[in-house]
Image (cartoon, rainbow, N blue to C red; front, top):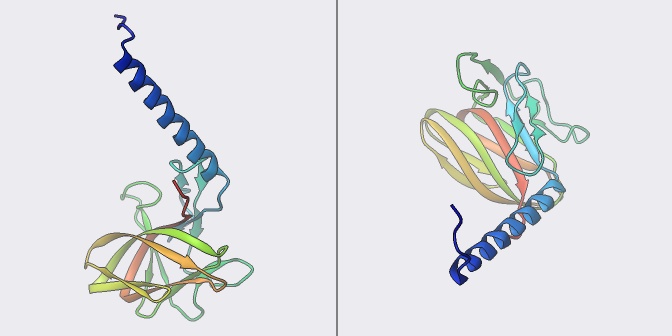
Length: 178
């Protein structure tokens, strides 16, 4: 069935094309950005991010990954991290985690700027908190998806967990003006 090209329909088509053009522009901008994607706990499965520019692999992080400036990410030295893998749980991002004891921290070296941080964390031992560069975020005693904006300068982003936590995955994506 063909519809007559009324002024209202022509206007809607023009708006849809403008939205698509703006979306394509954002996707091209995002494709150029350095994103930081971490999957904690195991190297048995490879996770991919497919909704932000081109598909990008997550970096697998295990308890053995101690921070060094050359690597650019890792746990603070002396943190006793336990890797967990549960093959019966959902996809690559959900099946594993790193268990951090009280006082455990994860460091990420990035380019200075404003970022959107999203992390999936399970607080163990009651209500807890994630501290991102000194800013506290409450965690319920269950699985939490935390989303917050962080500003990173010349020092690495420091993520601290208390009292103890299981970290499943984390993304750090530069903020783009829309």
